[in-house]
Length: 266
Image 1 (spheres, rainbow, N blue to C red):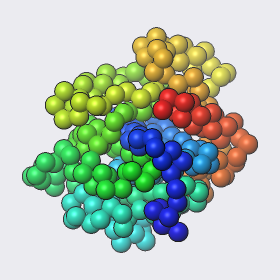
Image 2 (image 1 turned 90 degrees about the vertical axis):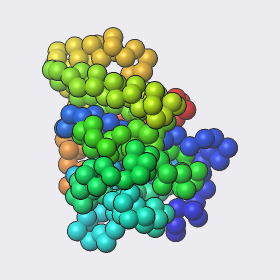
Image 3 (image 1 turned 60 degrees about the vertical axis):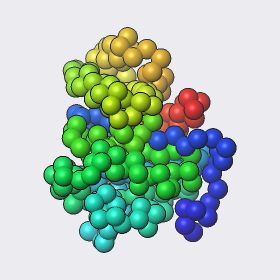
Image 4 (image 1 turned 135 degrees about the vertical axis):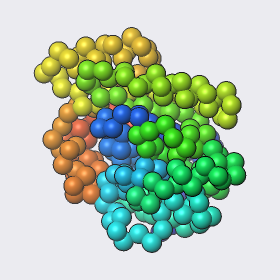
């Protein structure tokens, strides 16, 4: 069954396009994209996930073999391949994916000479986004042209922050980039929220970091924190979101709570 054959949960509500971004690697960005989208799909929301990171961790996190792909998001960006033809079903009901492979790494250089290079992704999403309640874009861990495209295409940003020392390092650069894109290219861009990941309730450091981030972001920080959890770490090796791999684990329940918060925010 194709993505156009299923109904949106909120047919009269505008699609929310959210770029998930952090220039630091290893903060749980792709993990959050996979597991939050899966939890929303489980809650009967219709979701499109666009893997826009050349590492393709979101693609493998949904069990799609990158070696077997003939086309990926690179072809939509640079070869005018219809995005609609790239959208794949996933193991989760209501969740669809546009995959990425390492081929996307070359797009940073190739986009430099492209016409309207900052808004190519926005243009190709326009044709399909109204079919979905949410569109999530998994950004690469850098602030290059791919990420700029993701910021122009989105109406809001979700920033995962790991509960570690220097947690806020680099976040100011993301906010500066957001401000620049908002003033020049996408006046509607806003911060949707910040989610704390890899929280360890046994350490004072995790609690201190949460307090520090809360002071900085206030009500933009989600109440749900994602715990450091063995099942979350294991799930990608099985090509499954945590909700499919270990539904009653602490990690799975946390992402289900986060999904409820996301829906409440609009």
